Every structure is written in C-alpha cells, then in structure tokens.
Amino acid sequence: MLHFPQRNNATPQLYADETDAPLPETLNPKIRYAYFSTIATGGKSLIQSCRDLYLGRTVCYKTLKPEFQKDATENLRLLREARISAMLQHPNTMPTYEIGRDNRGHYFFTMKLVHGYTLRELFNYRQRYDFSQLMNVIVQVGNALGYAHSAGVVHRDIKPDNVLIGPYGEVLLLDWGLAKVWHREGAPASAESNLPDLDIGVTMTNAGKLQGSVMYMSPEQIDREPDIDSRSDIYSLGAVMYEALTGRTPFTGQVVRKILEDVRDKVPDAPSHFGNLEVPKVLSELTMSCLSKNPSGRPGSAEEVIRIIQHNWAPQP
Image 1 (cartoon, one colour):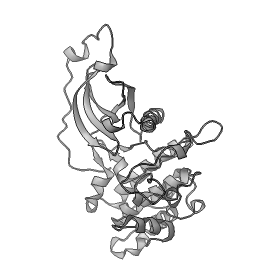
Image 2: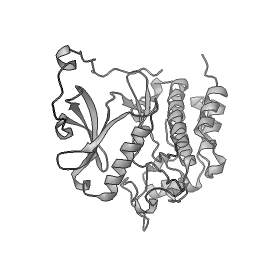
Image 3: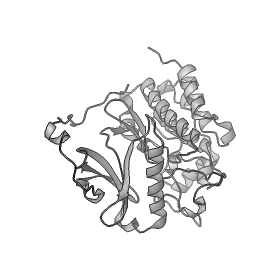
Image 4: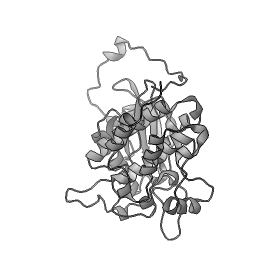
C-alpha cells in the first residue's frame, strides 16, 4: 500500500441536528448545492467542491466552462462522461452521485470528493516508492480497465493525471470524457468523426486536434483510426508502466510533431536498459509488449497484464 503525507482533511464530526434535519417539502435540485470552491480547470470543464445541502456532505461538482456551455458536442461529452462514470460501478472507478441542470439550464454532475494525490504527483517523488508499490497501482488501474472493457467501454485517455490515489490507498481511474462506446448494432456512438478531438493545445496540419495526452497515446490513436479498441488502452497503460519503472515517458521532447513521429515509428529503450534502476526483466518485457506498435502484438486484455504482474513477477521481500 502506498503511504504519503496526509493532507489536512480531518474526518468531520456528525451531529444529530444535521443527520435528523427534515428535508424541504419541495426538493429543488437547483438550490441543493452551495459554497462552491474551484478545485481544477480542464481544457473545457470546471471542477469544484461544494456542499450538498440535502445530504450534508461535500461533493465534487463538474460542469463546462462558460464558453463551452452552449456547445452541443461538449454537452454530449459531459453527459456521456457522467453516465459512463455512473454505470461503471467498480472499486477502482469514481462513484457518480447525480446529474442535472443548474439554475441557468446548464448540465452538471456530482461525484464523490476524494482528497488524495494523482499518480502524476507521486511520480514527482518516485524515488520514495518501490516497484511493488507502483505495480500495485498499475494492477488496480488494470482492474478498472478490464471491467470497463468487458462493458464495451474504451477509456482513451489513460495517463498519470487521471489516476487518483486516495487517503486509504484506494486507486481510482478518472475522467471518462473521451471514452468510446458503441451502439447495439456495433457502430461507434455519435459517429466519432463528428466528435472533435480533445484539445491538448497541439494542432496538426489539416487533421484537427488530437485526443488524449500525446505522451501516452497509441499509434492508432495518433493516426485517428476509426476502429480503435481496448488495445489502445493497453498501450497507454504500458506507457504509464514505463514511466513508473524508469521515471521517464517512452518518448520525450519539446517538439510535438517529433514525439508523434517517434510514437509511430521508433521503439523506445527497454526499461531494463537503464541498468542503474535494476528493473525486473519480466516487467520490462511486459511493458515493451504493451508498447507494441501493432495492436495484435500487445497483451490481449488488461487481465493478462495483471496476471503477468501478479504471477510472473514476485517482488523481493
């Protein structure tokens, strides 16, 4: 289990005057939430903490930034993210509480508020953690992915920033805003070509904008192939594993176009290449398998990745 400095989030005391307070005769969801405080801002979304006055708890409240609140595509994405998060009920996914419209008619949804650290923050102090602790996080992310894939959902934005480790050691896979789902007859939902890609601040010539974070994207995701499936997530999980083992991403640089070319064409040095790190051979080989340019060369499922970590590699006591 990971251990890290605790933030000042003392457990609130519960009192009868709060637990036994009557509900209003008419429940109005538009006045249910108060005392908003911004936690983070994404490219197009705003995440706040606020007080749920009906249940007496603090929750996470996600909505679109004002400039995107009339954008039909972004509203569809927010709805999809809320519903996917709610439908994927798993110990390694974030519980979703409610979806609704605010006083101005704009979509929002609420989630459990977890005070923790992202895997990105842990990587900033990677030397504090051994391979066993870091692989435990990878296994739990793999558990979430395996469950999502079995439900017909591809995450498409696996990266350290979207993995949260809570105060009890729980690992949560976040941000399903780019998730891909299919119609019952097998066609991708909402004609993926009609959903513009996530703005990562990098525009490719005559190709719109890329989905996901470039350091962790699979080659087929970079090439915007229409038949992307769960193996793209396996690649991204491998990129996160690579960083967990070596402290660096498979490909680095300041010129995005060069990074994209490397993802398509270049094979990174195996983690075991960095002799000073003493990366176990089985973990190095697994990581490189996940990073195969050809999806058919990757492990066939997240469960296979987990099996190799848990059964083919035994951490030293």
